[in-house]
Image (cartoon, rainbow, N blue to C red; front, side):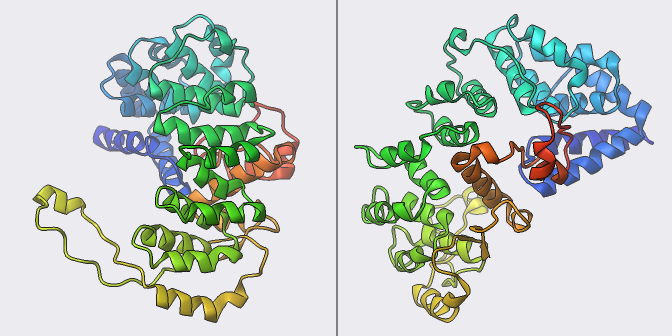
Amino acid sequence: MADWIVQTHFDSLAELICQISDRASALRAVAELDGLAIADDESFAVAKDILADPQTEEAVSAATLVAFELQATTLYTGVLKLLYGQNPEFQNGVRSGLRLCNVKPIAAELRRMADEVETPARIAILDVLTFHRIPVQIDFQQLPKVEDPEVRFLLLESLGRSKNTNSVATFFRDTDPKIRKAFWNAMARSGYPDIVNLCRRRCVQDQPCHDAIRFLGVIGSSDDFKLLLRLIMSDATAIPAVEAMGILGATELIPTIIKALGNPVTSQAAAVALERISGRGVPRNDPPPPPDHLTEDELDFWFHPGDPIPEAAETWWKQNHYYFETGKRYQAGRCVSDDPLGTVFDELPDEIRMDIYLRQRALDSANTPDWELETWPKYHRNPAWASRQSPGHQNSRITS
């Protein structure tokens, strides 16, 4: 295979690794990796050059993944050197690549170094091991205070995967926006026992947490209808309350969502919520012209979907409400109340699948398998299969 073809595969794989968040990008990455595996010697040479003289985080990720796919053990030292090093960009590149590799050949080395390297590298190691569900002993209380929000984010995700509920709870007051959102995901994944009541309290505090309100849609029930209806009455909390209604997907809330289409504050959020529940587009007026003051660069990114038409949505609901059973939850037009992780699960959009999964983990963690949705193959996500496997057994190679 010509060198330029190999380099094209590398560049494409590097780009894809950084955006894997759905099944489509994961499958594309598999194709690129398979192409590089076929070009064995040429791929080895490129990976070796990248690890010896790294230039970008993305290239390091691809080189790491290729090194382990080829089982090129002579390259593992270069991978680990970058992981333990001081360059956060290259360290993050190795970490991202190792998430998608079979790390069993270096698991013992990673465990040994988990208490010996500097804090950022230690947390990167923790991320890799917990992603592969490999047990690791780290005294979290002895970790120095981490200022970098990206490193704190990795630590929080790792604690959630390791089901360390007490340590996850210490992020309760973190003010970084990314951490606030990740906090609820980590609490759900860890199986925090009082997550529903904690979320409700955060929704009604003096300065309500918008992320908590949205997450109430993930874990809420009919007991929360009154709270959401109260929150939608205030401009300060109306948008996250409408978003939560769409995530919850309760048919009883659809008339309220349709009414919110006519409120300029909530119209766009309500349209998204209704589309999420119904799986159908909300009729809209033609978009307005862009504002005169925008520059040419700003015009390239300007977008207005058009204002929703409440009357059309109301007519649709009157004609179709009998397709939606009262007391059930719906997402993308499908009932997700009866068997949320069953056949319907893999037919749902990826964002919705994540919320459905987190709901099950939060409300019934003892009987909900521990998954990585974007990168684990479907058979790893079969509850019967997962219940027979020991932690760390899964192979997290990118697939779907």
